[in-house]
Length: 186
Image 1 (cartoon, rainbow, N blue to C red):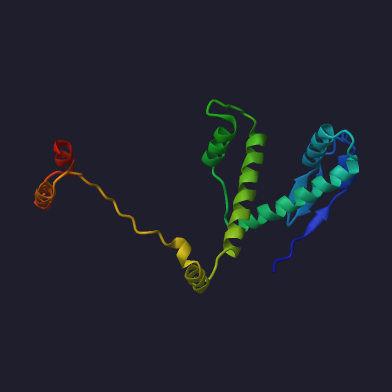
Image 2 (tube, helix red, strand yellow):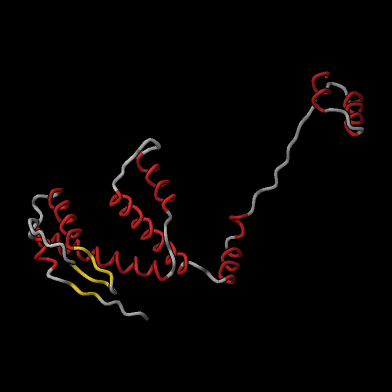
């Protein structure tokens, strides 16, 4: 099992001081640095959304999420899970509509990272969700009745008053006559 190294700078102190101009890093995960500015931006955003939240609690939670996300992103890189610019554009069109235009490269990068996180989670889930063939067969056998569809019969009839007329129509049908035409005529 791979060991993940995480180094934390004075991240919480930086995040708690929204006026800090330090452009250092808040944490390092296997050599990838998480910028302190990103931590501050997210903490500011969350405390703006909830003014009653304690800034240091928010900072702790945000830092924990950033580190977790970076661990997954590193895992995605090892597994060569990536997202193309065209896929990011398609997601942005889905989110905002076909006419949406935004030149902000930081937003596009955040969307790209979220897409990579999603794909990695789905790939990990798919790997764990596989069932052996024998289990699939056993399940099918136990639930066979649920997969059975009843036999269906399509029936059409032409009602006539006399038996000889019915036999004549049946003979015509057996020779290939068109049912709809015979029904209209009789």
